Length: 346
Ligand code: NAD
Ligand code: UDP
Image 1 (spheres, rainbow, N blue to C red):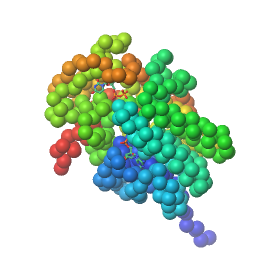
Image 2 (image 1 turned 90 degrees about the vertical axis):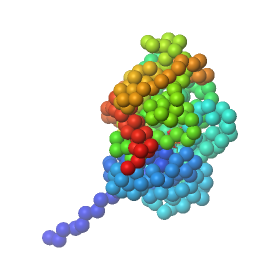
Image 3 (image 1 turned 120 degrees about the horizontal axis):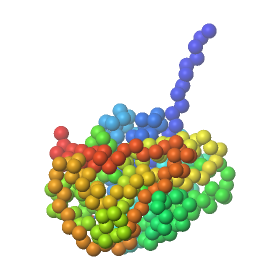
Image 4 (image 1 turned 135 degrees about the horizontal axis):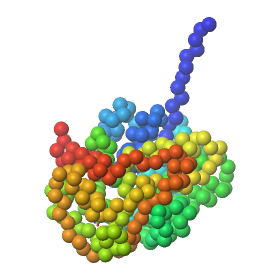
């Protein structure tokens, strides 16, 4: 009997913000898991050279569309040209401080952008959506570790934009059958791909601790300012749940697989390690990983900062069968590898 050819159906995922920090690592994880990826990014906070890095790691070049998630026509073209099966939505603005200065830009990008994207999905009849939410929706935590059921609040336009999109997704899910939605609440994503080919590229002075520390270790900045050592924490400095970005990326693949299995579902889950480390812990770990001194001074608290924040990871384990695997040593080593590769390429 003649053997019929076998075809492998590859699912195609639209990754908005796919040239950014987390989206690029998610693209790598998706491609390595056998998915095809179409990236949509307007490059407002990333560089197209990221595509080369992804190609060098995975051997596959993702399709790339330079465009804005707020543009309905661009979105319709993407959905018409590609048989998109699910959307991972990373595109947005993310700097808390900046969001208090230009709130309209934040609401426009993060809320209007999400509405435009979800509307285009409705038109294209694509109903699987993975959303980048944040632990910022927990406001000032009243319980540690923080479960998904913790009350939500926002103290700045960035956090508010995440809250509103979470609510929009809830309403959309309730309004029509068939949606499979994951709201993933990230804790503190850090590190870089171990290859040193992709990582985080902050513009100007980094707002976040780890990129700042990396630049101090590299000699690009004189010293770190530690924002307060009078918190109610073991050493007085702020405690956070740092998660390696490749673990986070794997969490997205697990969430996608979870959604694919469901007829319809609305999943809200923390993506963190469940462990908290202080600023001084991270400085010591980075010093060890880089072999460089990290000079620092203690300054006053940064307005809006909470003392401690770490995830309850029970639900992620239960629902997704996923748990972070990498510790702060690997986070610092990979961040340092990325920093040195960029500074001294070749
Ligand atoms: P990033 O800035 O590195 O990546 C975002 C990407 O989206 C960039 O490449 C940017 O050019 C693109 N973009 C922005 N607005 C766009 C638009 N209107 N149309 C098309 N592209 C657009 O940020 P990231 O750290 O990778 O964060 C990704 C997502 O995860 C964001 O939604 C962010 O709010 C969320 N998040 C990040 C963190 C974190 O600490 N990095 C924590 C929690 C949640
Ligand atoms: N932090 C600091 N100096 C910096 C940046 C951050 O001491 O230059 C501290 C900050 O106060 C917090 C921790 O590092 O306790 C993590 O801050 P980051 O901005 O990276 O994350 P987030 O505040 O969003 O959790």
